[in-house]
Structures are given as C-alpha cells and as structure tokens.
Amino acid sequence: MEAKTVNIKVKRYDPSKDKEPYYQTYEVPIEKGATVLSTLRYIYENLDHSLVFYYSCRIGKCVGCHVSVDGKTRLACNTIVDKDVTLEPQAGYKVVRDLVVDKSEKVGA
Image (cartoon, rainbow, N blue to C red; front, side):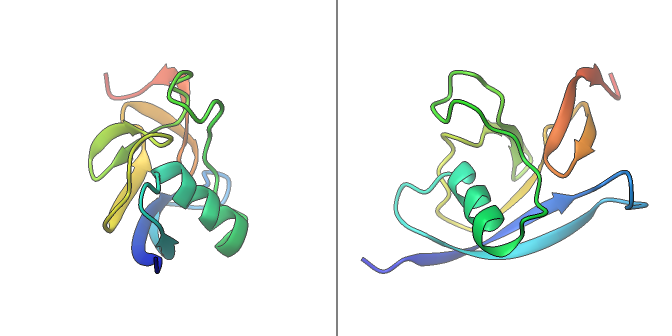
C-alpha cells in the first residue's frame, strides 16, 4: 500500500527569539492509522529537528500530549490523521515553545 501525503500545519513560537507566533507547513507521508504524534515524530526525525512537542506514554494514559487539532483539544498519541490538519498548542496555557505549554500557568481564564 502506497503512503498518502498530508500537510501538517504547525503553529510555531519560541519566545526567546520570535516576536509573534507563525505557522509552518510540512508534507508528511502517512499510512493508515497514523496519529498526530507519529506525524510530529516524523517531522522531528526527518524534516525539522527544531520542532518542540511533548509526549510520554504514547497510549493515552498520561494525557501529557494534548494539542489543538483543527481547533479541538486532542491527545496527539491517539488522534488519527487522514487529512491535512492544523496543530496548535493546547489553548488556555502559557506557551513554552511550539506545541509545549506550561500546564501550571493558565492564561486568559
């Protein structure tokens, strides 16, 4: 089975050097059952070593990998990707860098 390619649009932000957040789009080959986490790992390992995201258990138990997928908070480890998506940091928290947030510091509440 041939891999399908999707566009993963990621909201990037490094407060130590960026004035404002910006979006970067990556073309990622996926196979059936690909998750947001597997696409992020592909990007990091093959396309952009500077991308920052967090995960731990990879099975949906630790709930550490929350990201916004097309505007809805989801776990990256068990959210299936089968089309182009936009990924942003989980809303309501201070952004540490890219998709990593400080869950001890809520904002806008």
